[in-house]
Length: 381
Image (cartoon, rainbow, N blue to C red; front, side, top):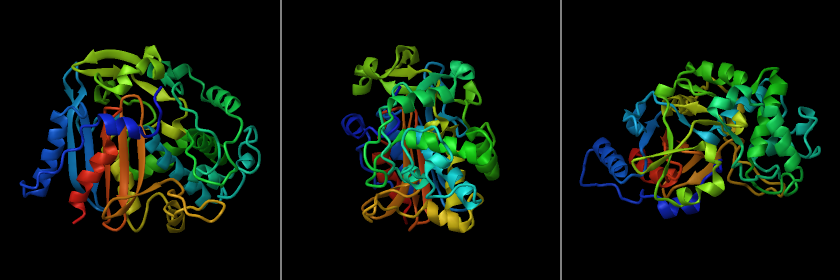
């Protein structure tokens, strides 16, 4: 349907999120609220959830706009949205749990757990996690199915087809960074082999439930249509203009006040982008990673989670075992972005400042990176 990674060129061309913070407003909270409200009034998104957290509390929380424009149903803190590739970091955490338990070894060949993949014995678990596997990354435009078809959908059949169509490596494993949705789809299958459970059930029990998150807050299916946001494309956008080339017509809904509704759907591989949730539930995960003692990962395993990786020549890459590494003009951070059919999001952890943030908006082309670069630094001091 949509490409489940960032859209940097489109975002720079079509985002309205270039306005500066109004420092005539002295109160920080009021200043940030003003900035977000101006973005709403500029039609940067129909609706948005944005949180900033420290290990023990929520510093700032904002939910605004429309979850359903036609029905005039508002975005609330409990409104669920799609987070697409942000799901990969949750998948990585699940893999690292199993590494900590001795059920998976980081430098094992993937073929130890999946003997029917076409990439030989060189690709390791580390390669999959660090996006250095060399496995291709075809644009996953059709790797989705309508929510109404979920009960009859076969993930294994879909994965076999994708592996058959993309059976050759793009480069030698470990040589360099190369993003691949297939890599994380395979990690979901590794979790199933190592745990004896489905990927979804393992993550529900060992990630979501450990964080005391209910299935109404975070899951792999839409918990309630009345508490779930619609996804949208801007009517006047490059993506909408060329939608017939990137979106199957069965996913396209009606126009609603300048926005094109994209019908509810799921990704074919939940491990690379299948989570449906609130910003609050992601905030709980981020807080767990900010704390000295994690509910999810033992300290040694948590250290691995945030350890910068290297290529086979020993050069560092901008990736850990599940996080990308970014910098602003004042701080380094770990992040994961997600974007697809109707939503765009990003979560960040700033180790130096001991805070984290997450934003989810129901507009595919919303420039999450620009937004967070402007707003997050208000909370650095």
